[in-house]
Image (cartoon, rainbow, N blue to C red; front, side):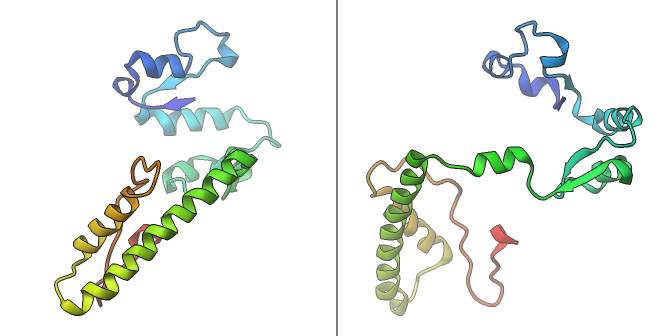
Length: 164
C-alpha cells in the first residue's frame, strides 16, 4: 500500500515506475490510497491479523501510526530489511564511495587552509565559509552537485541540527 495524494503521482513517468497502469494481478499491484486514510487503513489491516502476525513499523514512525497498531502486532524496527539490503554495497559502489570521500577530503583540506588564512583577517561568516566549501568541492573532477546544502554554525548559538 502506498499512501499518497493522487496529484503527487499523476506524472506518467511516476505511474510507469510504480507499474500502476500495467494491469497486474491484485496481489502484485501497488494499492494507492489517499494519504489521510493511512490510520483507518492500518486499523482495518490490523483487525484481520492472526495472533502471530506482526506489522513492521519504523521506530521513526509517528506516534499516531505506531499506536494504531496493537502492541501484540507491533514490531518496531530501527532498520527494516529494505534498509539493511540498501546498505550492502558491491565492489564498484564501495570503490566509488572511497573515491568520493578522498575528493571531499581534498576539498576540506583546501577549505581548512583557506580558513586558517582568512579567519585571522576577520569577515569570515558561516555563509561565506559554506560557499567556499562548495566552491572547493565543485573544483573536484566529476563533481555533480551537493547531496545537501552545507550546514554551518559556530559560536554559542551554533547547533549541529543535521545530526540532532
